[in-house]
Every structure is written in structure tokens, then in C-alpha cells.
Length: 327
Image 1 (tube, rainbow, N blue to C red):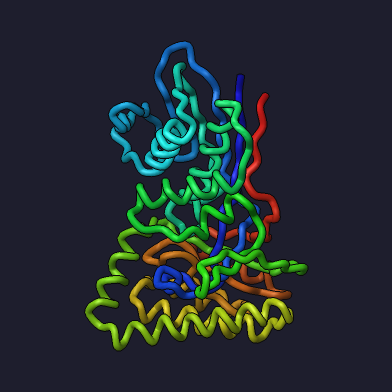
Image 2 (tube, one colour; image 1 turned 60 degrees about the vertical axis):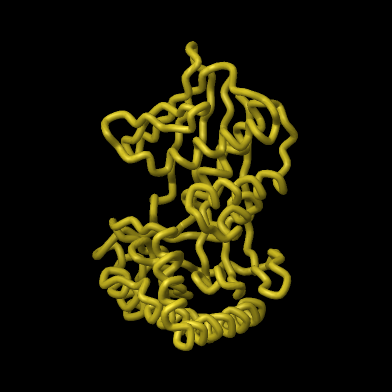
């Protein structure tokens, strides 16, 4: 028996960091995926390999440890470990036989594109299928958020919701409810990402410490981000290209003020605008990672220029969430 599962990555269009403090955010699933292949081994060990990263290791569920091969950091394997442990707790079932898990990535790690959420969601979907449990997206999204909280310490449900359900969402500050947005047009987006990985948990802590030290300065920034996101939702509905671009640029300036920008990210942001993007900004936690450029009629030009500096690729909104199958 071999099980395959996939889950999309995401980009945050508006509201990162502010969303941690009850402010709204808008984000979309993208057509870059994580793929998990899960099959049984002849022994009783659980082995994971990630060919693109050259990372592999054995997961010990009983003592909740990872024994990496070749002295690699555990990194993304932590999310797989926690997912398998949580599945056992949720179902009351045990992995009696060994597993060989192959993780294939179309999403850069540590780039602010929801790689950990996609890995978590795909692992949970595959494990539910392994135990012949009902494929329940609501349950997968809930458990995936729990995994991210346990591994990272803090996490928004945005990433795991998008990886599970796909599409576009608005996180309402009033109720905490995640509202599906029906965007019936192709939003031309380009991602540029650095070779430097970011640590979401550490960046959230850094911003929190600034908020606690300078509340009279940082709170108004979050309030401005909230207004930007509210207006962006209306601009998306109206398909207002100019306003959407301007709001992205405003949002980036506020993220810069929070201290999550870097010289490399800033260079890409302004290069994208100089190449014809109507708007560009950090997407995700910052500190490395990625920028997103909104470039109607200029996608090829922006992509070409960003590729001269860092890695870049075009994306589309993905309406597909996690998928699972048994071979």
C-alpha cells in the first residue's frame, strides 16, 4: 500500500503580523504544492527523506525525537513527527508497522509561503488515509493548526486553513471567523524569494517585544494595517488595480517600520515596482523569505528582473486544497 497526499502553499496579501493581534488579513492558496508519499517498510521504523533538501532521518514517536542522518537540523521533520503523534492521539490507533515517507517540495522552505503548514496538512491527510479514517477537511485544518502551535509556539490558522481548503480567505477580526472570498479574476502575481530562510516564531516574538516596549508607536501601525486590509478587500471585489497596488505599497512600509524588512527584501520590492509592478511587499513574517509583486500587464518584465537578483516565479490562486489518494 502506498498513499499520496498534497497540499498547496499560500501567500498573505495583506495583514501579516497584525493578524496575531486580532486584526484582519487576506491570503490565498497558490499553485505550488507539497507532496507526501507514505508506504510501509519491512521493519518497524519510521523513516523520512526529503530529496530536494538532502535531509532524512528516523522519527521516534514514543519518545518524540528525531534522529537526523548526516548531521542535518530536524527542521521540517518536526512537523511530520508532531502530525503523526497527534493522529495517533486523535484516532486511538498506532503505527504498528514501519513507514517510508518521501517529502517532495514545490515550495521553498522558510520563505513565508506556508511550507510548514502544507507539510503538516499533507502528512495528516496521508495518515488519516493510512488508518482508513474519513477524509474530513475541518478536522485536518484543526489538527494542523494544533501542530503548528506546538512546533512554533505561536501560529495563525491562515496557513493551515488555506493548505486544507484552497482558495482565498479573509480573517475577520470581529469574530475570528475565516471567510471564503470568491475572487472571480486572475490576479497576476510574482514571487521573489531570498536564499536566507526566516524563522516565523522568532520574528513574531521580536515584534511582540517591540509592541510591549513601544505600545504607543506599534499599536497605531497595527490599526493602519487593519484599515489597509479592509480597503483591500473592497478593492479586490471591485478589481481596482491601482488601489490594490497602492495598498500593497502602504502595507510594505508598515512592515518595514516593524523591523521585519531586510536589505535584500527591500531591493526586490523596489526592483519589482521599477519593473512595472503596481504594488509589491513582503509576504509572510519577513526577516528573509519572500516578496510578492502585483503586476497586471507586466508579469514577464517583473519576473525577468527579479530573476537577475534572486529566485522568482509566477503564481496563481489555487482553488484546490489538500488531496489524498491510495495507490
